[in-house]
Image (cartoon, rainbow, N blue to C red; front, side, top):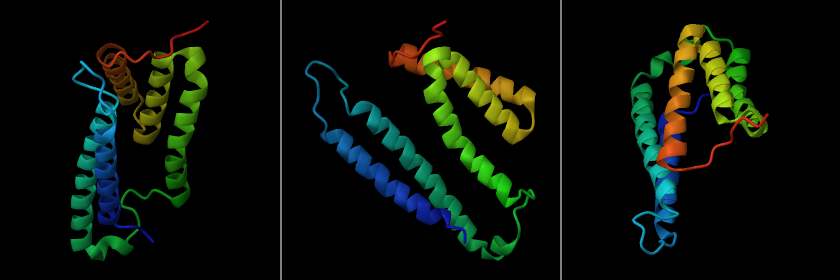
Length: 154
């Protein structure tokens, strides 16, 4: 049985609002316009926007109920869908294990490149998306937020 996206969106909306309210309750550091609640607040806003998208998608699916019993439109088998879902925790675990040795840039490029190439079956697109994602993430975290990212240690 497939869970409607409206249900998932509603739960995500409640959780994102709860996260935002909790982040606002964190203490503020004197003299700074931002504090420990800034990043969780940004994450909560992004989650809330995603939940709105899920709610809209679920509403559209609810209106078109007759296509619920049809097989997936792209012919993807259940075992392949399981592998796609399993690839996310595997990628997170790989990042946690490999990034202290290989550094953020190499691991991020490899993981994003492999995931996009595998899911889209287009390796050139995978390389372009991996390069762009790695660059944007590095500038966002290392430069803008000044988060120390792991570097190549050999």
